[in-house]
Image (cartoon, rainbow, N blue to C red; front, side, top):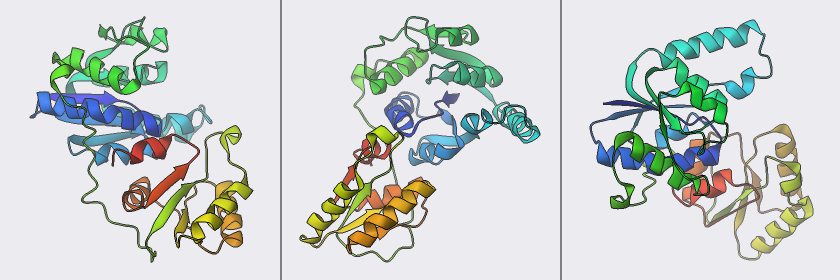
Length: 271
């Protein structure tokens, strides 16, 4: 059996999908599971050993230049990648119009949430089969119940298992002293940010315990803030630009983690 999951973003949403992948693998061990994800998160599905091919899309980037020739060239290439193989089941676990359109481009029986279970009801017109899953439930449970209905198994008999594996992932080439704390000072919204002086005070407090503070960054503004914090606290280190997998490896060996956003903070407890 060949299965295609559509869960494109964001980071935390992809992590919430992993237990459903574990369920599918346990219930149908010989199934091949492919995954469509946003290009910036395309590393993540590969953290689960049951996932085969990852098909990247760039919906976030395309929407900024919808009429550009490069955009349409990339869209055509992504559609070709989606249609390269036929699937027994295509599961849109995102529940948005954009993810339903992606499902429509794939070859296979399309499943999604029904009108009472979905965030964008218009998306349901692109599904051939629909599942009823209560909206009030946690995203992890909704994903598991959706896939259980699609494949016809009862999740009550299956343990909650994120299945993440970073055993084969190489540590980033950094000369770091142990122990260290990962400090995720960046956020998706300015109103979530912690004042810079608080980060500096935090680093000073850890210096008394001989702990390093590692400062990752994902934008020019975050990089500049990391350098300002490091300039004010000798035990702070500004990391080079790293992949999500390299950051996950650092998290795995950290003494602790602090952050203002949910993405990696939710992810790290399951690594």
